[in-house]
Length: 242
Image 1 (spheres, rainbow, N blue to C red):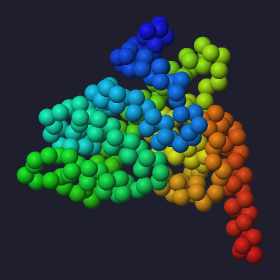
Image 2 (spheres, rainbow, N blue to C red; image 1 turned 60 degrees about the vertical axis):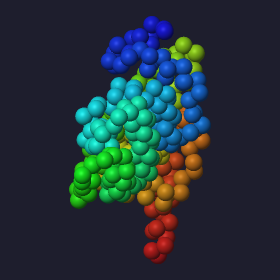
Image 3 (tube, one colour; image 1 turned 135 degrees about the vertical axis):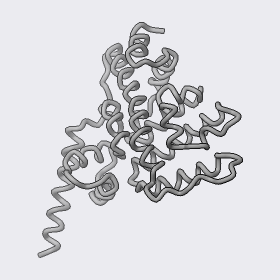
């Protein structure tokens, strides 16, 4: 294990083995993928090699608050952790692809009822989407922490190899927390004042933007593309009114 890997582990309060595994996997990072959930899925697959490492970056209290007895009622903690990791991939995808909290709650309730095993009364449906809200408030930031760990590793790796830090990796923690689909979504959110996550996702696809080629797209270029698309849409709408 390299000294900088130990430093990152100590700085972030995580076992050195996780930093080492992420460092080894970095050479196979999905740099051709520009979506938030694509990168998170890749990270969670690395964690899934040792499923019990789940609680290194997601607090157990957060897991209980979101998954309830689907997490606590288990005779096989490793299998449960692996199942939860797969569920997190689905949740991040829904969160970053414009699903409403009600839609996320519906999926979560079905998952909990399927995996809470033998109970006298199944989990109740929440009219306020409490499980989905807890995911957004408690678990999404924890996944953002894992993304931040990747960012620190990336910084050391590219410095060693005199390479370029993919801008997407730098932005990834924030993108997970806010539910951005890609950097276009991030740029659109930064330009907007009031629209919700769901409204922004709908606006994103109404703009009909070109796909971002890879993780190396710069924010300046991305912002320019979004600005041009917004101006074109506004101009088209104005012409249509006349």
